[in-house]
Image (cartoon, rainbow, N blue to C red; front, side, top):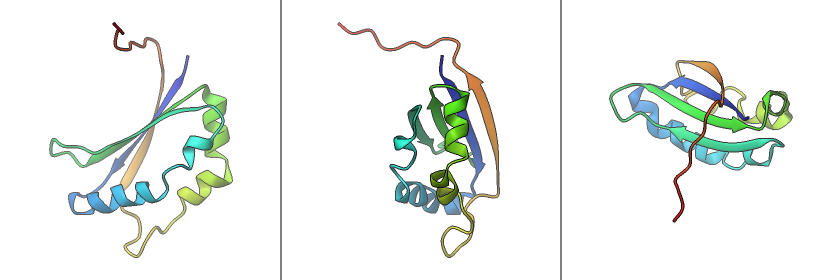
Length: 106
């Protein structure tokens, strides 16, 4: 089954709109990667400051190929924009999909 990579990124509340804009500016880069299955950018709405970047990959090898690609390096270079980095820190979490459910079709 697929592997999930979640980048948990700490973003001060006043930089949230800039975070969203920067991701929008590089939209489409990861979608072309071999083995890529899904992307979601999750903005907290409960007072937290941790954004989640959710990606699902065919396997660990596909993720590693993306993480070592020139496209990844371009999208994650520093500094980004006139204000420098938007985040104050991040962690990469890794999961294996054990179960998956989809809505039933009628």
